[in-house]
Length: 574
Ligand SMILES: Cc1cc2nc3c(=O)[nH]c(=O)nc-3n(C[C@H](O)[C@H](O)[C@H](O)COP(=O)(O)OP(=O)(O)OC[C@H]3O[C@@H](n4cnc5c(N)ncnc54)[C@H](O)[C@@H]3O)c2cc1C
Image 1: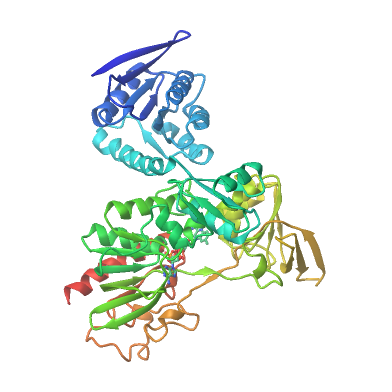
Image 2: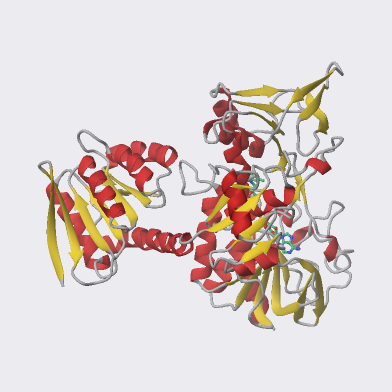
């Protein structure tokens, strides 16, 4: 039985709906200073979500914050906060920012009038707003519920994993520890990091019966102790699938970046039995981007991790099977059967295959760099390291957009004291988008050193110094440096396709009109290859791995979708 409760707090009122003997439900909290609108929002929310969620409404930011604290005290969680933007005393943005201190994982939605759209867009950056809704939102079935459904689904996913969290005990400068932090962070497995030499870390290690000589140690949510586990073992223990369920599929997608995820979403949603296989972490390069600003539909940008996580949820929703930490090392073709081999000798087959294996970072050719990788030298903006950069002087190598984004992120979000970009070219104009050059110019902590290359990295257990050479004068300089983030381009890793599909001299996969007569010497069909089809019928290439591709998130996603359309055409002829 439901009853209404009015809490009185120093004359302010918070109206909430509580369930009598029903078990505690998590909360959707809405705040609007106009009582009529406030009631209307609560009514619409209750109509759809009232059975599963407790709807709490408040009529000012202060009251809503009070409600948050009360909810916390009762051991409940707020899943979604819906705040009106224009409120006296405290704007919706200010309220959401404060509420984040109490419920950092709550999804944040701002209600705005059309005239306040810019404020909402600003809020996307300031408070990582998840969505803004224009008032009036009628009909809610079209304008309110789809957004809320999505946010609640995402929150449930994160929430299910959030309690209890895994523990990771490692050393700050150990490469395996860094990789494991990155793995858990990018897979959104909630975990807490403990330095092995901290009192807390020591205490947990000893409780787990470990002396800390072999690190990292993971204690899973189920309290199982894993000592330096392989990625596959860790993935399986934290609930990520690592083995395909079936032996045969309509479609195997290799690579879990934007192109692969795009293909998986379209393949599965269009009825193909689809499996997508990723060797590291779903998200690909895009998952490492701190802010993608040129992806259609996100005017203020969003982090690559967020974008690709949403894509994962979408692929799962359509029941694409996601297989983690499996490295594909071979492709066999026997008539219309394509068999994909894994590095452990097992395999899985399908009618069609989409190659979406992208590219990986080029290694910095500086003396000593290899040994210090993941111990101060990082490829990409390692999520797990960004937190360690607060108050430090850090360096970014590279002059393209990815380096620019990382520099902005390190300066603004990670709170680095200074960020120095080391660029070989005389300026950024040739390699970086104008909007980023402008952003960088406006951030005082970021300095750009042009005509400079890193020639040596040194340090005992971790990076301590870098030596730079001025390309104009030849002069060298050695500087103290603990964090070097490298973004110097990327190349495909497609050796395993040698002798199977045609590739260009750099290893990019040739497809459609880029295939020459020589490449098609063994082509068995009367029709020419479709646009994204490789030199083998039924094998398609999408995204960065394809020769002549645009190397952008949107084009990778688009090619993934288009490849699925061509798979359908191919299957019709089988
Ligand atoms: C830091 C950074 C910032 C960027 N910012 C932007 C931006 O703002 N805007 C923009 O448009 N583009 C941006 N890009 C480029 C964009 O991310 C890429 O174009 C896009 O990710 C390409 O997608 P993809 O799926 O083709 O390949 P990838 O993203 O490279 O994904 C390929 C995936 O395949 C997996 N894989 C590879 N080989 C195998 C194998 N043998 N077996 C199993 N799995 C395998 C990899 O582990 C990887 O996850 C950025 C790139 C970087 C690195």
